Image 1: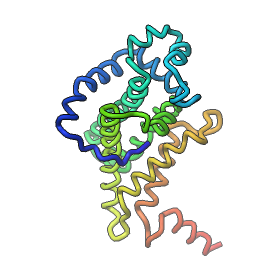
Image 2: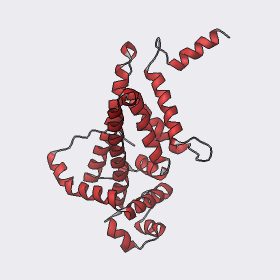
Image 3: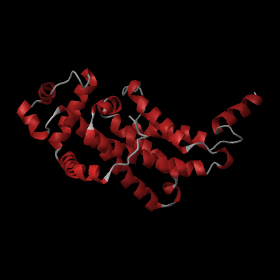
Image 4: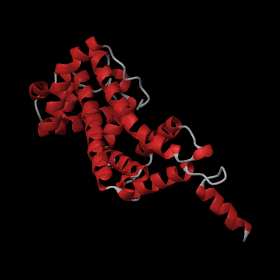
Length: 242
């Protein structure tokens, strides 16, 4: 999942994609049948790969006719595009809403620490219930071309920027020991996206619990004491008194 993309596009490209984006946004938001199809398609793409997969395979898995599937999408590439659009548009909108709500509450709820935990929670909460979409978004972005690719990269950049803004606030509090907000943001995405390779719903914690643990991990590294993380400093101190 390439989240450090350059979102700059020409005005001509933006205008050309406006109608397509509006169609995708409206359909993905309000058509429950399409959302179910997208989840099915993501499962197929994750299981067999994008190239070997076919429209017929997706239709059969979704329990509809090929003609019925073509009512919703015009091609396999559009299906891949809509999977990724639905994911990133939903995540961006969800964090915008949650961040605004937290900031409105004021106090500790409005602090970047709380918003970091919420960002991680939203990411995990979405993908732990739809791991196939995470696999597809991570592995198959390069299959898109032209305006489809431009739009998804632009959405990814917005999503990346939401996290970067939170880390910039956190890193600005670290004084002389501040680290790169960009490096911290990309490290976080690397960590939370990697979950698709090891998460076991029967043995691992919930999205809420994992979000707290991930946030704690990153906050300890962002707010160092004498150049060391809080955890390392505490452990070293304890070992010296054993």
